[in-house]
Image (cartoon, rainbow, N blue to C red; front, side, top):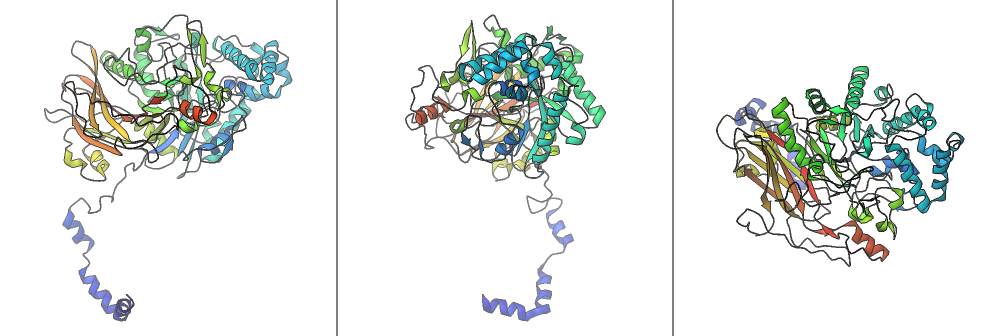
Length: 639
């Protein structure tokens, strides 16, 4: 090496000239390869990797979170999401296995600022009999605190809060404005473009008749614009529970500030059928041309999975789907007095909403349910934990303890949702070109997002008309995916021929998670008679399993050890990929397609509680599940 280096140095200018003769000019190099550069990474401006985040998290500033004992504020929530260790409200140290890339903090807007003042025993609150009752329950702790918090929430849902308290914590009141400033300034402090994106947001908490119609709002902007407004509320006399009034606020925000905003529907399985209306009236509104146009404009995203149940599908609605019965919640929300019916369920689950959207589009010319999907926790602990082995649950009252599994989440005359039914879910992955507010927001607008129930599964999904197996013979198939087709969240391009659409999809397991069982494509369509249909196709799977006569692939197996809360990756695959062409395509039928990826079986969070606390689990508790990812759909519309 030394002799060679000495010889090269000794050549000096002469050597440089000799080497130059062998170097092609820029014009010659371009001519050799035409318009396509040799480097597959040159001139590439596509999303390169998923950015992981949270769209729905509450701190102690939220009415219910504070009432249940959450003393952590926005700063704690931001630091935790960025990977720092914090101490929970119950005094337990914790941190995430890996930091998130972005987050939207969504404290409730109604009674903004009330919870910290209740905890502090502010005289103005104690002067009201109800305020004093809630404070005494809060300070007593334990069961008394839980009853006090539920009474506060019930009064909120029934709109029977004391008028003086509502007035003191509504838009126009000092406490409300101060709290909003605190929320905005905390997001500004933690926003770090290129490393971590901290979004200003809030939750609009509509519960007409106790039916959950919540929406989370995400602003693309910073403090300069956000502080020109205050968020809307739902309690009278200044508020409304009608989503149309939320849309009006969003319109006014953009017109006044020049900023941009979107709303995300809260998962609908506690809406008692009202989250996805298809006809008649709901919450004071009517499903008409105005409604479908405004919903399509302002709600490009849906929270498909979270702590209060998974909202993709339901076995009553999808009886042929062997995996539809995943973390379903069937009891109604706060004020339901009758058991749920199939008609009610149709207004609550994402797959059915996607199907109904096709029918509404045929009727009105606009599809109000053309949404991308994501996951969130809806945690009220300030802690965005969706990992089974690191689950700090819904509220401070059910943070890790030997007894938390016994706490019912909802209890009514019709039944209850016990503590072990809470779900350690979920996160949203965004295909954005960079880690900034603007790039991530724009990805939401174009619906290039996907959901997982917690694992960080990598998932790509492209639709086109001429994908082939050869397109998979590269480690950068996404380059071809964007060139020949469209990504998740898009509409298929018009077809110039008579063939069926083809889809290229691939998934990678979470690097520290479980192997993959299978990939499926879920199709929904509207036929010529106006009937809605769905079908689930197994399109790629691990091992040498063979589909049965109906095309269904057998179960993957199970390696879970309950006693040690563990599993082995001796089954399943680390990655799955395929090109699939719709065998049942009809060019005259509106349709959508999305991907569902299933992991091999792993332990649920209750098994980790059993191991760490040495407790016995209720016999009805589910111990094992198959975590999953859901892509945003790709839609086909006849030309």
